[in-house]
Amino acid sequence: MKPERLTPRSHGGHTSRDVGGSFVFISYARADQDYVDDLIEHLTAHGVVARIDRDTRHGQRWPKVIRDRIDGCAALLVVMTPSSDESEWVEREIRRAQQQAKLILPLLLDGLPFFELNTTQYDDVSDRRMPTPSLISRLQHLTSTEPAATTTPASVPERGPTAYQFWFDEGRRLLGLEQPGPAVIALDRAHELEPGDPDALAFKAWALNELGDHDGALAASELAIEVDPHNARGHNNRGWALIELGRYQEALAACDRAIELDPAAGYAHINRGSALAELGRSEEALLAFDDAIKYDADDPVAHAHRAAVLTELGRHEEALKADDRALELTEDDAAVNRHRRRLFDEFGEGPE
Image 1 (cartoon, rainbow, N blue to C red):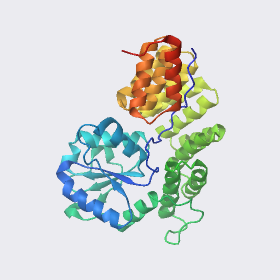
Image 2: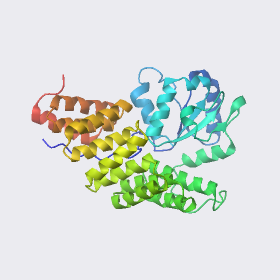
Image 3: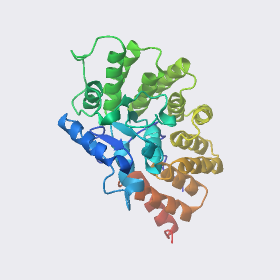
Image 4: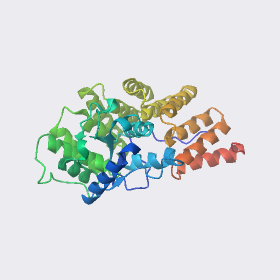
């Protein structure tokens, strides 16, 4: 039984039922609940929808409810304090946001900036102050579900860092709304304003892959890598494009480079497994999908790919279990359900 070919994995993507990017998610420690309540009230008063993990700390907190909220958010606000720096939940939320290419916006309430976010600009909210008006304006833009912008707003300079940030955020917003075509236009504007920043190019490659323009995605990702050879997102999206173009050996090398730069990048392990599977190296592909699950045990895409390669290896009962796990973690997935039905029809028994 030849398994249905699954789509390679972008740097991000979301599975939430929410309109993509219509809210921000706040990551915090319970000790800081009073400040977070005030923050939510302030954001709401300014038209920004904020979600938290209230009532999900136990039971269903992970894997699905919080994962889906992070996957669907426009940005992750991290309230940094000594308590949240020690929180396992905050650490997991940050890592998930990083894997999904989410914008992370730290708020320093107390203590020192987090080590893993030390290159990210933060808002100083010590003494329980609220975020700056410029950050509130940015959140209003990022969470908007309005049609794509065609001109720079009057409140934004035509050129300079603020203009770049506007168009880069616009591209990310539109990707969250699953509008890759307009996202490409916005990201092109960002690149014109800041040719030396690889991120607009890497996100453009993602959008072009979503559009099926894999030659264009390859060109954009290679330009991102030319600007910054250490851009893991660029290498991964290059690997995705090469898989779609049937250039599997080159894709494998691109994914290996992405993993070398970011070993915990589950998305790159998934694409590496896809390239190996296309090369007929099923045992190695299985190990790659296992590596992806090691870094993100709750990723349904990794479990679905694992089921496909287990089928290729003739390990049908394990494949059914992997399909079941994928379905536990995501909404009703047509490809996974088709694969599971075919397995059950052909081999007769599901997992015990």
